[in-house]
Length: 164
Image (cartoon, rainbow, N blue to C red; front, top):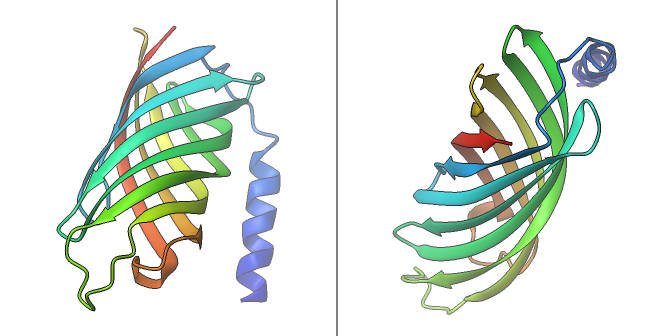
Protein backbone atom coordinates (compact mmCIF):
# COMPACT_ATOMS: atom_id res chain seq x y z
CA UNK A 1 0.00 0.00 0.00
CA UNK A 2 2.86 2.38 0.79
CA UNK A 3 4.45 1.69 -2.61
CA UNK A 4 1.15 2.39 -4.40
CA UNK A 5 0.72 5.66 -2.51
CA UNK A 6 4.34 6.65 -3.23
CA UNK A 7 3.98 5.97 -6.98
CA UNK A 8 0.63 7.76 -7.14
CA UNK A 9 2.03 10.89 -5.50
CA UNK A 10 5.16 10.75 -7.67
CA UNK A 11 3.04 10.38 -10.84
CA UNK A 12 0.80 13.33 -9.95
CA UNK A 13 3.79 15.50 -9.03
CA UNK A 14 5.69 14.63 -12.24
CA UNK A 15 2.70 15.22 -14.51
CA UNK A 16 2.04 18.61 -12.98
CA UNK A 17 5.10 19.88 -14.89
CA UNK A 18 3.88 18.67 -18.29
CA UNK A 19 2.81 21.32 -20.75
CA UNK A 20 -0.88 21.82 -21.31
CA UNK A 21 -2.87 23.86 -23.74
CA UNK A 22 -4.85 26.73 -22.34
CA UNK A 23 -8.44 25.92 -21.41
CA UNK A 24 -11.54 27.89 -22.40
CA UNK A 25 -12.68 30.74 -20.17
CA UNK A 26 -16.19 29.26 -19.93
CA UNK A 27 -17.88 25.97 -20.85
CA UNK A 28 -21.57 25.15 -20.44
CA UNK A 29 -23.32 21.87 -21.14
CA UNK A 30 -24.59 18.57 -19.79
CA UNK A 31 -23.05 15.74 -17.79
CA UNK A 32 -25.00 12.51 -18.28
CA UNK A 33 -24.75 9.23 -16.42
CA UNK A 34 -24.55 7.68 -12.99
CA UNK A 35 -23.64 4.35 -11.46
CA UNK A 36 -27.00 3.67 -9.79
CA UNK A 37 -29.68 5.07 -12.08
CA UNK A 38 -30.34 7.80 -14.58
CA UNK A 39 -28.61 11.08 -13.84
CA UNK A 40 -28.32 14.41 -15.62
CA UNK A 41 -26.48 17.54 -14.57
CA UNK A 42 -26.23 21.03 -15.99
CA UNK A 43 -22.50 21.68 -15.98
CA UNK A 44 -20.55 24.95 -15.98
CA UNK A 45 -16.76 25.26 -16.06
CA UNK A 46 -14.82 28.49 -15.40
CA UNK A 47 -11.08 28.78 -15.94
CA UNK A 48 -9.19 30.03 -12.90
CA UNK A 49 -5.75 30.00 -14.47
CA UNK A 50 -4.01 28.59 -17.48
CA UNK A 51 -4.21 24.99 -16.21
CA UNK A 52 -6.91 25.19 -13.51
CA UNK A 53 -10.67 25.53 -13.49
CA UNK A 54 -13.73 25.34 -11.29
CA UNK A 55 -16.65 23.13 -12.28
CA UNK A 56 -20.20 23.51 -10.95
CA UNK A 57 -22.95 20.97 -11.60
CA UNK A 58 -26.66 21.11 -10.76
CA UNK A 59 -28.08 17.65 -11.14
CA UNK A 60 -31.00 15.30 -10.82
CA UNK A 61 -30.74 11.56 -10.16
CA UNK A 62 -33.41 8.92 -10.49
CA UNK A 63 -33.14 5.27 -9.45
CA UNK A 64 -35.48 2.55 -8.20
CA UNK A 65 -34.78 3.50 -4.59
CA UNK A 66 -34.59 7.31 -4.64
CA UNK A 67 -34.77 10.62 -6.48
CA UNK A 68 -32.23 13.30 -5.65
CA UNK A 69 -31.22 16.85 -6.56
CA UNK A 70 -27.68 17.99 -5.87
CA UNK A 71 -25.23 20.84 -6.39
CA UNK A 72 -21.55 19.95 -6.83
CA UNK A 73 -18.47 22.18 -6.93
CA UNK A 74 -15.02 20.94 -7.98
CA UNK A 75 -11.54 22.43 -8.38
CA UNK A 76 -9.61 20.80 -11.26
CA UNK A 77 -6.11 20.66 -12.71
CA UNK A 78 -6.01 20.10 -16.50
CA UNK A 79 -3.05 18.53 -18.36
CA UNK A 80 -2.56 17.97 -22.09
CA UNK A 81 -1.94 14.42 -23.32
CA UNK A 82 -1.70 14.92 -27.07
CA UNK A 83 -3.33 17.36 -29.47
CA UNK A 84 -6.86 18.03 -28.24
CA UNK A 85 -6.80 15.27 -25.59
CA UNK A 86 -6.54 16.39 -21.97
CA UNK A 87 -6.78 14.61 -18.67
CA UNK A 88 -7.84 16.26 -15.44
CA UNK A 89 -8.23 15.58 -11.75
CA UNK A 90 -9.63 17.49 -8.82
CA UNK A 91 -11.61 17.56 -5.62
CA UNK A 92 -14.62 19.28 -4.13
CA UNK A 93 -17.98 18.55 -2.62
CA UNK A 94 -21.61 19.44 -2.61
CA UNK A 95 -25.05 19.44 -1.07
CA UNK A 96 -28.34 17.88 -2.06
CA UNK A 97 -31.78 16.62 -1.16
CA UNK A 98 -33.00 13.03 -1.51
CA UNK A 99 -36.47 11.43 -1.59
CA UNK A 100 -36.45 7.68 -0.98
CA UNK A 101 -39.27 5.86 -2.77
CA UNK A 102 -38.91 2.39 -1.25
CA UNK A 103 -36.62 1.94 1.73
CA UNK A 104 -36.23 -1.80 2.56
CA UNK A 105 -36.38 -1.34 6.33
CA UNK A 106 -39.43 0.93 6.17
CA UNK A 107 -37.62 4.01 7.54
CA UNK A 108 -38.05 7.37 5.88
CA UNK A 109 -34.54 8.84 5.50
CA UNK A 110 -35.50 11.64 3.11
CA UNK A 111 -33.78 14.97 3.36
CA UNK A 112 -30.65 17.05 3.11
CA UNK A 113 -27.16 15.59 2.56
CA UNK A 114 -23.56 16.81 2.24
CA UNK A 115 -20.77 14.97 0.42
CA UNK A 116 -17.10 15.24 -0.52
CA UNK A 117 -15.97 14.31 -4.04
CA UNK A 118 -12.89 13.54 -6.08
CA UNK A 119 -12.72 13.72 -9.87
CA UNK A 120 -10.58 12.26 -12.66
CA UNK A 121 -11.30 12.19 -16.36
CA UNK A 122 -10.37 12.50 -20.01
CA UNK A 123 -11.64 15.11 -22.46
CA UNK A 124 -11.30 16.01 -26.11
CA UNK A 125 -11.23 19.66 -27.12
CA UNK A 126 -12.38 19.95 -30.74
CA UNK A 127 -11.26 22.74 -33.11
CA UNK A 128 -14.84 24.01 -32.90
CA UNK A 129 -16.04 25.23 -29.46
CA UNK A 130 -17.06 21.72 -28.33
CA UNK A 131 -15.64 19.74 -25.41
CA UNK A 132 -16.51 16.05 -24.78
CA UNK A 133 -15.42 14.30 -21.58
CA UNK A 134 -15.67 11.01 -19.72
CA UNK A 135 -15.01 11.20 -16.01
CA UNK A 136 -15.17 9.30 -12.76
CA UNK A 137 -16.31 11.08 -9.60
CA UNK A 138 -16.30 9.08 -6.35
CA UNK A 139 -18.48 10.71 -3.69
CA UNK A 140 -18.29 10.18 0.06
CA UNK A 141 -21.32 11.00 2.17
CA UNK A 142 -20.53 13.24 5.13
CA UNK A 143 -23.92 14.29 6.51
CA UNK A 144 -27.37 12.79 5.88
CA UNK A 145 -26.33 9.80 3.77
CA UNK A 146 -28.08 7.24 6.04
CA UNK A 147 -30.10 5.63 3.25
CA UNK A 148 -27.22 5.27 0.78
CA UNK A 149 -25.16 2.07 0.67
CA UNK A 150 -21.93 2.51 2.65
CA UNK A 151 -22.12 6.32 2.27
CA UNK A 152 -20.11 6.00 -0.96
CA UNK A 153 -21.08 6.44 -4.61
CA UNK A 154 -19.17 5.86 -7.84
CA UNK A 155 -20.37 8.42 -10.38
CA UNK A 156 -19.31 7.84 -14.01
CA UNK A 157 -20.55 10.29 -16.66
CA UNK A 158 -20.22 11.55 -20.21
CA UNK A 159 -20.05 15.33 -20.58
CA UNK A 160 -20.67 17.55 -23.59
CA UNK A 161 -20.06 21.29 -23.27
CA UNK A 162 -20.05 24.40 -25.45
CA UNK A 163 -16.97 26.59 -24.87
CA UNK A 164 -17.03 30.38 -24.97
